Length: 408
Ligand SMILES: Cc1ncc(COP(=O)(O)O)c(C=O)c1O
Image (cartoon, rainbow, N blue to C red):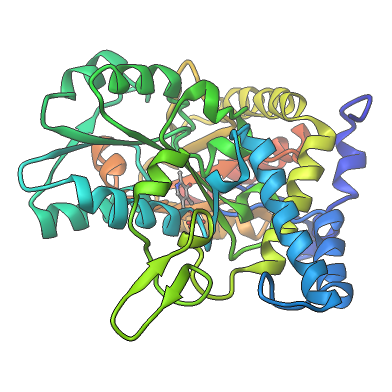
């Protein structure tokens, strides 16, 4: 682990952060959508393509073995990162979205019939809503929504009231991508398991900003996505308890996931291969392994402390701006600040502050039910990463003050 948290030094690891846009230094605050990549990841991708590239698993030659070793090595890094008990519990997918779909289409479809209930939170990203809506449309399942209060606090007592003898699944975010609210997932799992209900956790934000120990949480499934964790696009992870994975039918069919294929029958391979049909995202998985090494070399707890301080400071600075409405002030929250300038469309605000070099996201953030809960159709969102600084928060505040004057 590095001795002190030297953010200026860490910024040098990310070549893109040295960019200027419109003649101004880039302030990248769109990390909840996708994070920038450190040189360690970029170099690892380059090495994988230039020195150890071939298809994995089925080869007998040197490069096939090198690629397989690196790919399976990445699986082991993910296992350790989540503290899963065995590498077979780690399935590589394209992204978090595909991981949720995998569970809904296999585990979900087998268990959930007409009238059965699925409990989500109102904070879910569409990727943890739509696959369950498919089960509503196709199987007649009923979706129930766990609420948040006006500050965005997750209401665990209200959640518990939704669990009934018909509940077959809980699928819930670890950390909201719009409000930043952190859900007490261990307690959620305890309450669900007490009634025999399995739990999937969407860790697309949680895996980046929070410590994750899937054995301690005791969740049945945990999903995350590589590109938000400083890794490449095109790679995601599904963790599943081995007993579930072994019992689940496969998702996609094709090469790699079978044991034998005959004219009149097929037999399937074991997890994880049963769920990794076709050529996987080999180099992307290797890149994700490098991203995990990078994050671990800094230390997640120290990154979290840095980000929490940035989040606190951002709230302080943005609260000073009269016309700003902030969404999400939960007691437990990560470094994400959603806001609007009253009377102004968030797209206009984001476009204006972009001219000051400040990149934020504006729109629905794929959380339409949550936006409805707060009576809006869009917000702006500034989301922080390990490389952001307080002076970048100041640049955001200055750009917003200018925008406020512009729209007044
Ligand atoms: C909470 C949450 N879940 C799921 C996703 C989907 O991630 P991906 O698009 O990489 O599948 C996102 C991405 O914004 C997210 O923030």
